[in-house]
Image (cartoon, rainbow, N blue to C red; front, side, top):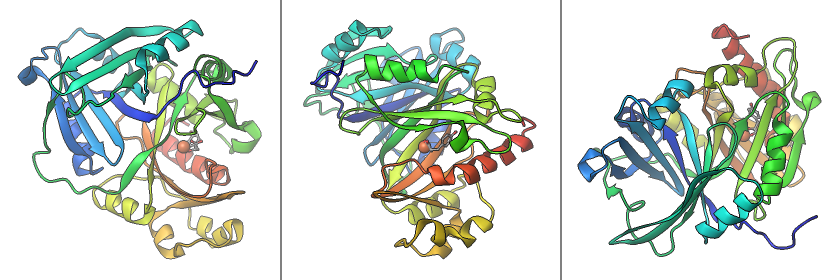
Length: 366
Ligand code: TYF
Ligand code: FE
């Protein structure tokens, strides 16, 4: 039965927190390569004894990089098992306590009870529930909070000036789950979080010669928060989703798509700073305009940068994918510019997945 009122209104993504082996060095990478600015810090110098966290910001995107200072802790155990990865997808809400109660009453597994954090800059309320694997959603209510990030954190600036690359907001966060588990998590987002099914990609849409997967895109009511869920499917050889699961050792976040309004400038700058992207053969560009029709951009810079284009009923989109940003083939980024299109680049799946498979083969995992 459809509920007429949204029991979980979301204002957007509040932050994404990664558990990493060395937060100081990861923070340097996100500043120098991705153009994020350091805005806050928590650690021994601020009275936090067991961990260090760096808060980075660009546009509306906030990343928190957290490492353990202890050999035995939930954070070090997370890093031991998964490598560097996403622990928290935090959602900005108007009522964290209610968000927790509404979702837990619908079957969410609690991760931490609602609490109110206070300092001289105001109040932040947080509460967390589990989603797939060890990943959690934290509901963050920050009415009138004027501090750098949250109570417990102190403002901290980048040690050298950072030049942003035009990253604006989180477009979507994709999860990889185990064989046959996609619909379980689709149901979770529908029943527990009140999301709706936006799109389905089956085996036929996206199987290449080797790799195969299925994907369903879940969206909240206002469309600000979108969570595609992938599961592996049977193919000739190892699915890219299976490769992820082999290295992450559980379901988890596969890619974070970040929006820009000038993808040529953003990707040019990221490449100049050493970010590595997947590439497609030049034949992709030979018939691109026949496939997608007129686009505002010149073809040459798109081809030089290996940016992909796809069209749907409402417009078109430009997108590109990084290689994994850690040594395990797990988390990667998508840079996306939407020009009307609300889809996910289905027309690029074949070229994209063949590109991923070339990388899998280089790693000996195909
Ligand atoms: O988010 C999406 O659906 C697109 C396409 O392993 C995609 O970015 C889907 C699965 C995948 C990589 C990219
Ligand atoms: Fe994506």
